[in-house]
Image (cartoon, rainbow, N blue to C red; front, side):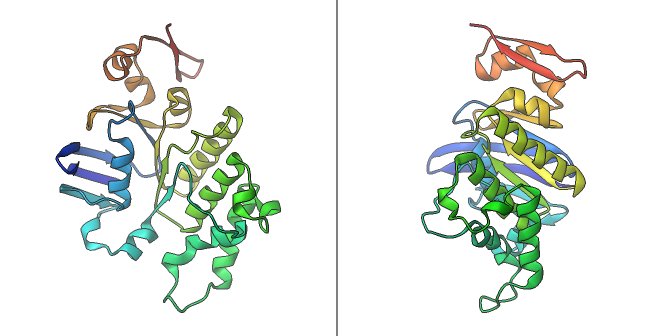
Length: 257
């Protein structure tokens, strides 16, 4: 099923940010959330995650109403790869990724199990991070640390994987590598993948579905071919662009200066 959002509204004080959003986000697919700065993309993601509580509306995970979930149960279902982390300690990469198992501990007094540590090793290996396992996490480069954030999120064993501008600090090579890993996991493990992205061409390459937002509302939803049109880009971004397609039909956006 994935994520079902029904009439979701959210405000910061008197400022309305999200306006009765209604959308289904499919399981086993990568969905990109696009739109200009300040349109409500990250706020939408934070409502799904539970960092923010909506003024009204419902969010359902694979048939389960999130209002009935406590924080620990919610953390077992959904994880986040943020744009950056406020980590300031000398924690090693291995210990930082191990934090992803916290929702699965039987109690606050219980230690990590062999299986918990095994999951860490598997995810570090999958993302090519095993050589950094004993390094201080904050000593890594931006691209390396972004993979560490992904490893921690995967170690939670989520059904829903959220990514908030995961490629904003990465060069193109690392951005493609990261999204390729995420897309393969979404397919292999039948996850619900949701990524807030600014790069329209990366979204076209890796997303099965696109949600395009403006002013706290969903303006368009569909495949990259359906959503990333010259007319829609003009209406949502006020961007004049040419849209071309490669041999497989993937659209590419060329801004017109």
